[in-house]
Length: 126
Image 1 (tube, helix red, strand yellow):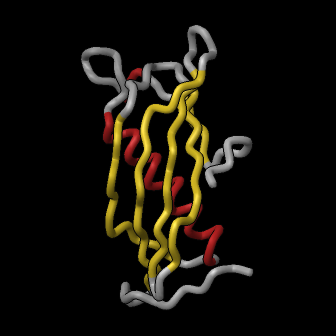
Image 2: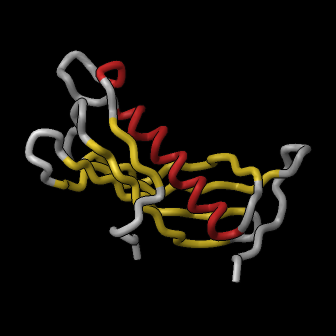
């Protein structure tokens, strides 16, 4: 279950992150999803180096605007032999009225790699 009290990552977005309509680029949101998912993977299996191998089921529900505070909540879905699948839910607290809305969600799969960039086994932290 995604923990709504403690976001994995929280950011505010700036004018440089917008398109010509004043909305935040989807790619900016996806980069934050990638970071939050990697933090969740490390929390679940320890301090490995992770590479992103898949970003699936990315759904943009609502736009994000300049000044919104964006909170990313994560949970581990599956731990494989060398991989960790995470779910990331993104909420935005609107700058103008402080209303919070779900804006994006995605599933991200990471693979742990060693110094030789080859997959290494992972284990769930106890």
